[in-house]
Image: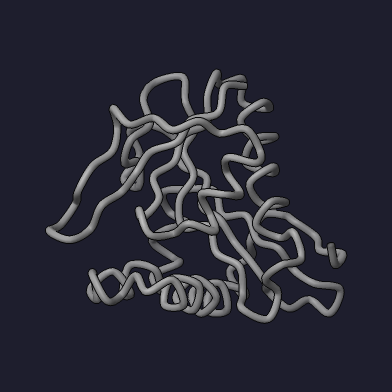
Length: 164
């Protein structure tokens, strides 16, 4: 893996963070089923108001990945319940894929869950994001089919859990 620093995002990185997130979702074909979601992915300021934003930066300070760490009951929570931590909008820049950045960000979320003393980390993922699913399963996440859901017609989200 290329050396990256994972830390809290700074406001001056929000535009780049939005660009990386939109690019990652576009490459997975997400906007083919939910074009309106792009505006939410670009609205990093709103995301920061309701979640902890972790960012991966390369040695040159370039944003190459990000993830939103969400607590249950917050405006960004989708499937988390009390005692759980959720993450959303995991994204890695196309030029940085295959370097372990997605795994590093996911493990940083697990570490954050341990720091907070939660028992479980959960997430939803578009059913067609198979690369992400392989990553989650390799790390040790298990499917949580009872929390699968469909926010819009044609948008099928599947759930995963990781016991801390």
